Length: 76
Image (cartoon, rainbow, N blue to C red; front, side, top):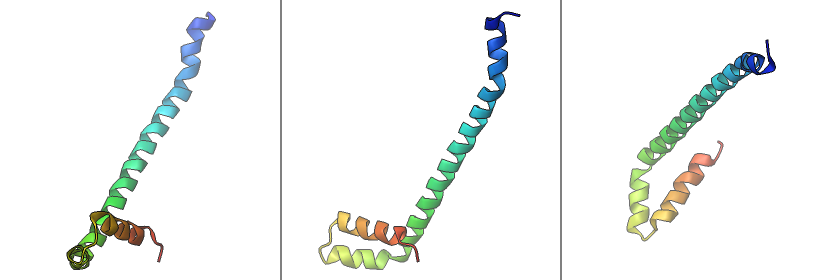
């Protein structure tokens, strides 16, 4: 068996493992993003009146977004 014939066979297992690891990593990233979206959506839903009052009193959209993100990133 020549080296060019043996090379694909020897690389098949590591390539498969890397593919599986990549798929699991992508699934983990998607799940983390969905979880973060859910937490922030819940936080905004709970603070809808507060956000409306802040906007009515002159806060900018950026100010409100920063307040919501700051609240979401704080660990209680």
